Length: 241
Image 1 (tube, rainbow, N blue to C red):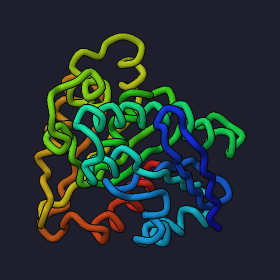
Image 2: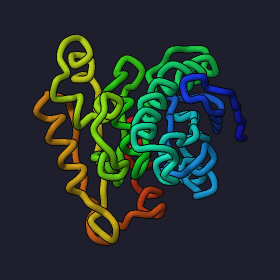
Image 3: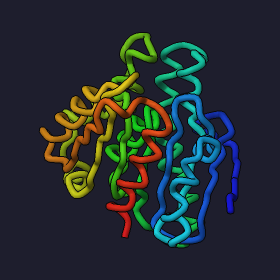
Image 4: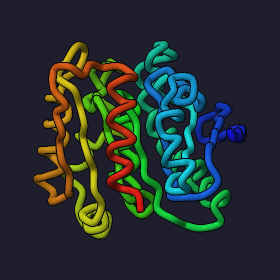
């Protein structure tokens, strides 16, 4: 059974929707692809492929709108606005979406975050920015150097939004906690895939001592939903109790 909640986020100056599937289990927050909404994962049959984990009570799955990704895909506003929106989106996830998940669960369980394409970028960013909220991340077919997609000049908002930029300087308790998390990068090497993006991010995490792994699923897997239908249930089956 699906339940949806919607509210106006003052951080985003935009409505945001959160959908959820399941009754109990480890919270899994799915980020859509660039232009997707909270129900994209259902329309594209990802929820159906996760049904065994949901029905067994191992996962309670949530998804939220891709507010910043949608603005980037549709070239809304200036590049500087789109960079600022990514920063605000990550803050909204940490300060609004995940607290709403905790309220729904009645507990403060760490969330597993996952997504494909820009959803992978958001998963990595949320895990690295807020390791006190996230237990693990599954980043599929990721695009992590988003400045080339946004355009414009480098801004402080982009710095805080992009792990490729803020991780080199990260030190202290936040890094110590992040070193107790796990991030998996999965990519095909078929049509429209670039596993090099995953290796670039993974190598950076490795230099900071953050546990991670890159899996190349090979040339038969392209940048499309059937690839992610296979990937995500496989990784969640390993990660979830």
